[in-house]
Image (cartoon, rainbow, N blue to C red; front, top):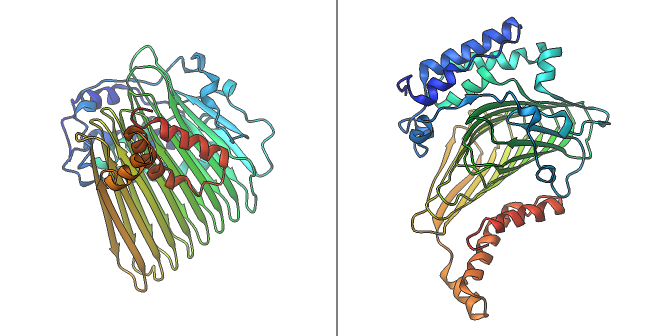
Amino acid sequence: MSQPALLPLVESLLDTPLPASGIAWLDAARQESREAFAAAGLPDTRVEAWKYTALRALSQRRFAGGDATALARMVDAATLALPGVQGAQLVFVNGVFRADLSTLNALPEGLTLQPLSQVLSEDAEPLRFGWSRAAASAKAQDAGDAFARINAANATDGMVLRVAANTTIEQPVHLVFVGADGEAELVWHVRNLVELAAGASLTLIEQHVGSGEQAQLATFVSDIHLGEGAKLRHTTLQNAAPATNLLRHSHLRLQARSEAILHVIELGGALVRHDLQVELVGDDAKLQTRGVFMPHGRQHIDTQLAIRHQALNTSSSSNWRGVANDRARGVFRGAIVVAPGADGSDASLSNKNLLLSPSAEIDTKPELEIYADEVQAAHGATVGQLDERSLFYLQSRGIPLADARALLTAAFCRAVLDDLPNSELREHLSGLLIAQLPGA
């Protein structure tokens, strides 16, 4: 659904000059993506995937493209560390790689880790197929992919990570994306590529933090490919600054016998949306997703999970929780498709939600489409309040009402972290969930 091209947000995005790389195919792909964005505009609530996420307020804002002084911005080093997470670390400030804040010394054998800006300047050719494919896809689709298009047109930095075949990387790789106030309200873009070759194994920690009160718009596109028998543990902690508008698009592609285990914690930001698309393209591929979103105040957090089973005997298990307070709104859509020929697939999805305020809202929509035989599939979603009998029981044991509510809500959220193997990180994330609760 197109909208007038003169919306302030659209106008400011189109006014930003395209990055000039001097690489013909890259400049052409960026131009195609921008033209596709200009033609289709922003999605509105008539687009099914955006039915519960209106862009009216965001579309009236203007943002300045990029941050010319990102390399000099002060960052509190304490915000970059996570308990139990050691190893290689890449830090980006307003979408720009900061070598002075990153740790890339003595990478283990088999791990290649570079900022996208470096890859584009030294040897961009291996990225050609993926970037050109994004541009070609942008031309064919509707307004729903607007922010992926503008990312393909403007992204100049991000991370390129590759793990060689049959290599296990013991220490996690830690990505930190920092949003910091600039001289104007900024828009910036990050593009990540992760490739695990056959038999490789990696733990990836992705952290979004921010400071300041200035509004920002940030777009992320991540392409993740798992070769045969590869295994990825990916934990995301999103705790961006309160005025940040964060639009993320992640696409995972799993080959035969590969496995991806995802944990996602959504806490910060003003308008936050994550389109998480997973394709199980190889026989016996496995996916587990665990997530919790906790909007409060006037926050709006939207998760769009789409899983497609395309091969024999694939499995997916998804368990997501939402807690909304004040006048916040949460959105969760979990769509599973079992394609023709994906016989023997096993798919389950659960989304349970709590409303802590009469003015809070959570919209949840599980979807299931099956076109194969001998399939096991289950899905369900609930939205409700804390159990009154449990509250009464805790109060009868001398626990004040506010503490009883906090205990039950914390237990409800922590269920998604139970299988996180890093105990220090698990406890830290549990603490952040508790701190997000009313009265904490």
